Length: 126
Image (cartoon, rainbow, N blue to C red):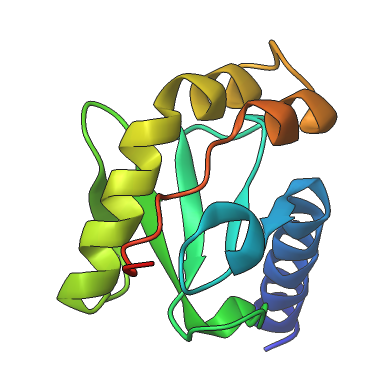
């Protein structure tokens, strides 16, 4: 039982470390209806991906996220997204693929990422 608790504690610590490295992107910045997280590769063994809060708004609830891969094209790796949300996230990723990959690869820092990211165009009529 103690080994199981130690493993769970280690997993919690790793998740906390991963979150520390992530940049929070709110709807007002991305044009998406929800908060997403992006990160540099760090020690990850997987390819570039973003975490998407499944609830709309500025919430940052780790337990309520979907994971979306970027290459070769946007795709849901884990979690579930409503079809409208999935379309919007895939469109935003496609619009920002080069910047997201450069950030993942450590070619740019968080400030540069913020300067390069483009918001999803508004679909509301003037």
